[in-house]
Figure 1 (tube, one colour):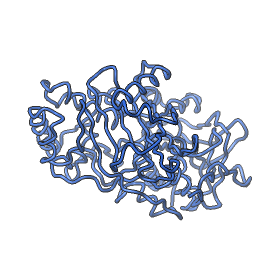
Figure 2 (tube, helix red, strand yellow):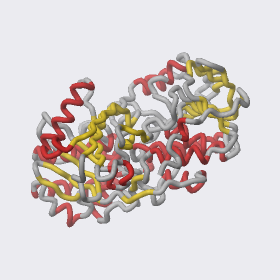
Figure 3 (cartoon, rainbow, N blue to C red):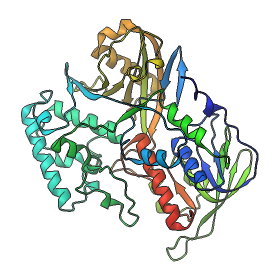
Figure 4 (cartoon, rainbow, N blue to C red):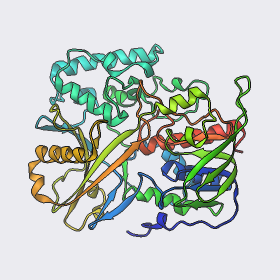
Amino acid sequence: MDLFYGISNQIKGPQLSKNFDVVIVGAGISGLLSALALSKEGKNVVLIEKDNYVGGVCRTYDVDGYRVDTGPHIITRLDSGPLKILMDRYFDVVPKFVPIGKYYVRMNGGGKPFPWSIREWMTFDLLPIEDRSLMMKTAFDLMYMVSAGRDLSEVTIDEVVPSNLSKTTIAFLDYLSYFMLGTSTANAPVARFLDRKEYKLDRANEKSSISIPYVGRLYNLLIGGRPNDQMYPRGGIQRIVDSIIVSLPKNVEVKLSEEVVSIDVEGVRDGGQKAQEVERVTTDRDEYECSTLIYSGSPHDLPGLTGGNLPVDYVENLRNVEQVDSLTVWLGLDGETFTQPGSEMWVSTDPSYHHTWLIPTSNYDPHLAPKGKQLVGFAFIVPKDVDPEEMRRRAMNTIFTTMPELEGRVEMVHYQELVPEKACWSINSGFGDVETPVDNLYCVGSSTIKRSMGLTRSAYSVLRMLDLMKLDGNQK
């Protein structure tokens, strides 16, 4: 059980050299995956992390006898998606994964499995039947728009759904929008709901990644079939991080508690052609020269680190990126309350409550809770105008109002204020890219590619970075 626990906190790295093929800024999951892939491809890599641990929001740690993740996690597309590709190529040790079971929707006092087919949708009586019929028509209209080549990355959900839907159905769509994109239906592009499964690099036209072969959740909604590629790592999300750590070869150095203070970009842009290059990276402890820089930090920090030596339009886009803020409440319960496998989507039409996603992680691995106990995580998207203490109060009110029977069973409460996505997928805000205006600078992470969400999105960004490096001649 405890074989890998703590490995990520013990990395120090040998003191080899200040000259590296690749410098990676940030040791979250994107930085770790980048370090593993590039080192396995023969690059000498240094990974620089300002905190004294690696993994970012992909960690698991002890709280009063329970092992909590940094936020609830479900790993998607594990059949043939980006993390599966990276694990097959580069992992020496692969975590064990457990099927997540069903998604249940709890709304207005009722509960039902999430509808993945036409038949299930038409009998999904948590929503009015008139709304279900209208939404089916909208789904078919979208299928036609996709087949006709319509660019849905600039079309919001509000623009395509009927205006006369009930408050209940609007709340349901709002829930899906916030938890899939981090923004409201007024800013959420329809393209996110047509996100196809397969990975394909198209450097010339990223928008062409939306096509008819796979239409993600709408495809499942119309054709049917529950997702069988969504899993939870046995032992917690830390298992993925620890598997990366034990797979790292000796040509990787990891620098903990070391903060990058500047990135030296030399050269100028000439005639619209990229001529800028990163020459060195300076930290609060040292300087590192490199041939390639991989940046996995906040997009807001990059312009300042480079001293403003980036194109104005690129900087403006990064400054307009809106991160997703969340609160996770972990409850340790004195017995099993959530007995069915799967997670629950709590949808509320009451403005005093908040949409919630919960996952009883100890159902997937009983060792995450003391014997006879249960560990449950409740995730909330935090509105911009709500301070942490007020959000905690609202969250607990939502939990105990929805399930009053929980209040007397709680023996552990743990709060986490997290940034699960460094950029919300919104039409009216900025969004980064793996490719940058600097020849040997690439960005990875959840703010760099409009595919999926969470760890899966980060894995997509790493695959795209590897492909772009090969195209640019920075990777053999």
